Length: 118
Image 1 (cartoon, rainbow, N blue to C red):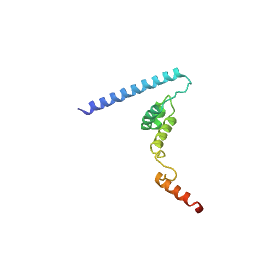
Image 2: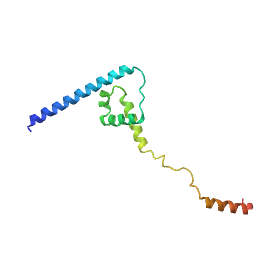
Image 3: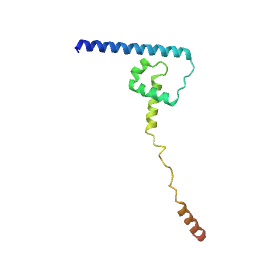
């Protein structure tokens, strides 16, 4: 392949991608017009998917592309997802570990037989 051929292919790909982006932007604008001012509610999976893609784009490009949600909102979702990923609170155990039933029964037996110990 010649350099010109590669450059032509790269230019075509860039134009093709730009056309796809413009189409998707227009489609999003139409959907936004249909919804009006009503709030769009996403589930956790949908927020996660948008957050991952949005983080890849970065705030500057995201502000050019995003029409439904603000870039700050999408990046906040990403920060929340990262915080949840490294949150170990579900694995933490609070308080003193439980003693076995056998040991508990021995303690009660000794306490009952020696009431004067306090």
